[in-house]
Length: 172
Image 1 (tube, one colour):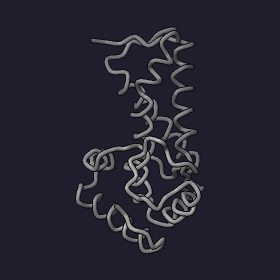
Image 2: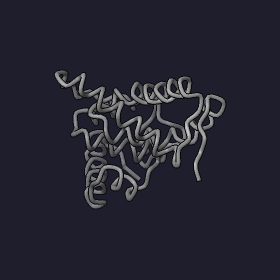
Image 3: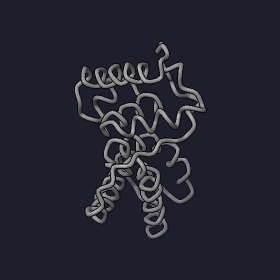
């Protein structure tokens, strides 16, 4: 069964596919600061295609848009190849639906904690973002990042222990 994407149903397509595109970008970007811009570029490219073609018939709209995202990421990093900044960006606010197990994080110290995570390996920052901000399960993160579940758990628990030690609070 195929799906027809048009400018009229673009917004519905956006809402149906956004979380998958976000996960893809978080996993593939070398710099988490780039995620929002590249997602925007992906949907702009889709919309521009729709304006040219009027409609696009696809078997799987999520896979089609991930394909666009893949090309956007490749193109972006090809052009940014000489720039090797590994700066991470996380929202300064904790998402309201985040499943936080760290009771010592509050709106006042979230920036300090994210800055601490920025100093860690980028894989740790990606895992924390996917686990706490996106609410993915460990098994899903393992699939997305192609890492063993035990490795994901070790990163989470080791980092939580370090956070607990640094801020001197109990982690539930």
